[in-house]
Structures are given as structure tokens and as C-alpha cells.
Length: 310
Length: 271
Image (tube, rainbow over all chains, first blue to last red; front, side):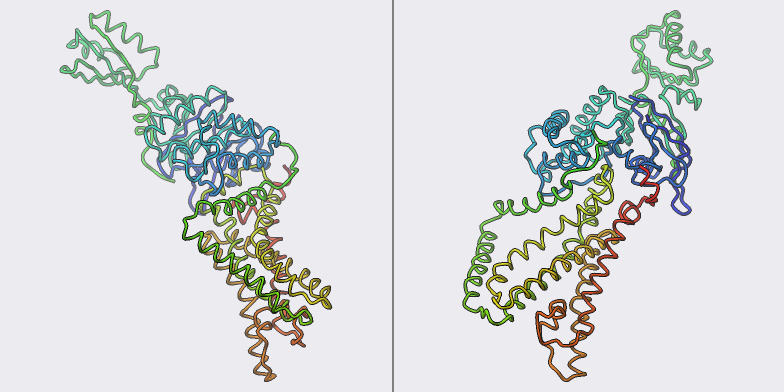
């Protein structure tokens, strides 16, 4: 669905995006992670045909953003991180304007607007003025506009930025709904726990370069990093460290005797966790809970990046 | 569906019309004080319209030219400022990126915006129309209306083109408005005023105020006092030539001016 081939953007001496290569299969949800100034928005703007690549190309469903930008615009739904709305128009008029701009026939527009308003839970605001909506509602309206022409690829640049926790959760639920429709989504966000929740793959970009990409599992493998396993143990806690130190894949063991927990830094794959747990149980250690650290993506991000900007 | 050939009314024109109508409908939300001001203005307009009937001297074309001059001064001050907000304001509001990622062609974007900017000037012309009809002397009706119709629409078009071009070139809406209004005033007012002053100094003749404020009308013979067109006549000609240049630049250089993508038009046309 999306192929980035040596995609590069230079501004005089500054290289904002440096030979980015990426392949997104149809239905894939790709989380684009990177610090501020890493080149995420520049990459998304190039894909949205708002910036022309200095070098390389990007193909959306086989169509080049450099050679045929007009065709690409029909294939993408773009939601910028900082967008505005028109004053003096109602919600349905706003959507009707974009529907006509996307060349949707007049007779189909009314039902289509109803559908996207229902999906984004804005039906009740159909006749409200756009400027009267809350920030969260405006974000949902922009997403509704993005879905009007049923694009196969969605480019969402920080869709949850500036939202309060409730609006953020609502936005996340909405994105999960979109995942079920089978669309390919490229989403950038600073809130990594949100991306970890529903992205099939992630890409970490720093100083314009993609430093790691793939599923969280694959990135751990590629980079040789460890995953953190948190164990709750009711009996045999004193033996845990001795048993685990003998396992080659275990890098570090931190036991908290008061809490009855143990954090294990582990370089293996997910399947190896089962062997590790079996070994502990065979040794008489009663493991009642085992879970991978929820902030793993954040940890991964911190370890892979060095805080550089383009 | 999304790749269908473009047809029907330009969506940007419909959008502009809708916003224009909404501005009128939002009058209902105004507080009582503003309503009183608006009603007073409407009453003043109607009273002046009624009294005009008694002032009109159908045999004299002075009244007609006075209305045209007032109308054109109003257009000259308002149109560049209004149309200069088109792209710059969208850029400032953050709506431009959404618009530019729609599959609208550059031509549709430019022409839709240009046509949308005619709504304001049309209102001014509409307000002036009753005065103009009442002030038309029967004997010169054909000449006066012919001259007006051949002068006013090109002038509006020129001012709109100038404003929209400035909105594409200058990033801030306020800056674009200042530049567009400045250029319009330079060629429409400043240059003719200098010319009038020069006339006075060289020929010891006193320039008429219509000669000072409305060179376009003077040049086309609506006001008979001017016998030799000087710099005053060049002002509107510069404006018209400049407008054609602005329009051509907008249509052909839209990618560079507004999209900032440096997409080559030839490569884009392949799509």
C-alpha cells in the first residue's frame, strides 16, 4: 500500500528526512515515533503531497507522489497535527464542502455525511457551527472529513495532541474502530502507550533517519535490546535470582522482597518466556503473575534514540 | 468515485457563497445596540435614496459620475483588502493544508477563489445601483452605462486578481492586505493626485475632484473636463496589465506560490 524509496528532504544544509525506506502492507497500522524535530511531520507532508521530496519517491498504491500528486490526493486521507476550521459554516456544510472537493456526487453526499458523523459520534452536532465545537470534537470532525472519500491510506499526524484524557481515550477508541475497517494507517504520536495499544508495526525516526522499524518484537531482536518481564511470586522468591542467573538470555534480575515481585531483563523472544516460567515452576518458585512491562515501547524508544534532531 | 472528472459548480465558489450568506444570517445573533446601528444605516440609505430623486438633474451627467466615483473609491479601498485574505488567511488559520490535499486542480482552486471574491464588490455595486439608475440622464444613458459597464467589471477583476496574488505571495494575512491596498491606492489614487498637481502647476488650471479621485472614469470620458489624459490614465492601465500578469502567475505558478512544493507543472500535468 505504501512504499518509501530513499525518501529525502533537504532544506539547504539541513537534511530533515534522510533516505527513508519503508514498506506498509494493506491493513497495516504503522506507528511513527520520534522526538520533536526528527522528521515525522516532514515525512507525512511529503506523503500528503504538500512537500516535494528532494530525492527518492513514495508510492501510494503504486502511484508516485512526485510524478502524480493529483492521483495520490484521492488515495489518501490526511489529518494534520495543527489544523483549523472555517468560521461561519455548520458541521454538515463543512463536510459537504470537502465531499464536493473530493468529487463525491451530490446525491451521495447526504447519506455519506450521516455515516461519517455516526462513526465519529458527531451526529448530534450536525447543525452546530464548527467554531462552537470543543477541541476534541474538532479533531473528530477533521477525522470525519478525512474519511469522506473512503481513502485506503490514512495519514494521521498527532491526532490526539492537545486533547484532554477523556477526548484522548475517545480518539483511541475511534482509531481502533478504523483498524477494524481494514484501512492502512500511518500515525505519528508522542504518546507511545497509545501507539503500542493498536499499532501492528512501529518505526522509530531520529534526525531524519529510521533507526528501527517492525513490530516491537522485531525491533527488540534487531537492536539486541532486552524486554522487561515483571513476575509476582508468592513462594520461593529467595531462589529466583540463583535460578535465573543461570539462564543465558537473562541480562539482569531485580528482586523486591517486600513487594514479592521480580523484574527480569530478558533478551529472548516471546516464546522463550514460557520456558523461563516453566523452569521457575519446576524449581518450586510459585509464579502467580507474569507480564511484560507496559512501558516497553517507551523504554525501547529511550534506548534506541539519542535525543538528536535533524 | 473520487477520481471522477471535475464537473458542476466550483466547490470553492459554493463555499464562499455559503460563508457570505451566513455572515448575513448571523445578523440575528447581534446584540440590540448593533441592531440599532444597522437599522439607522439602512434608514439613512433609504432617506438618501429618496432625496436623491429631487437632486437629480437628468440633463446633467454630473450626478451619475459622482455615484460612479463614490462606488469606485469604495471598491478600490475594499476589494484588494478583502481578496488579499484568501490564501494568506487560510494559511494562517491552518485550513490551507486540508484544502491543498483535496484532488482539486490548481485551476479550480485559483478560479474558485477569484470568483468567490466577487461577492463583496457585487454588494457595493448592488447598493449603488438604485442611485445610478435615478441619476442617469435620458439623453446620455447609452454612453454612460456603456462606459460604466466597460470600466467597473474589469477594474473589480483587476483588484481581485491583485489581492489574491498578494495573498499567495505574502504569508501573513495582514501583510497581504497592506501590500494589496497599498498597490491599489498607489495606482488608483496617489499617481493621479500627483498628475493633477502637476497639471495645476504646469497649466495653471484647477483639477476637478473627479480627475483626482477617479482617473478611470475621467479617462473614459464620463467627465468632460479632461482633455489630455496624462499619468492619471496610466494608473488604471497599469492596474489592468498588472492584473493579467497576477492571474497568469497564479494559474501557472500556483505550485510554487501556494503549495510551496516546487512541483513542476509539466510533471503534475502528467497525472
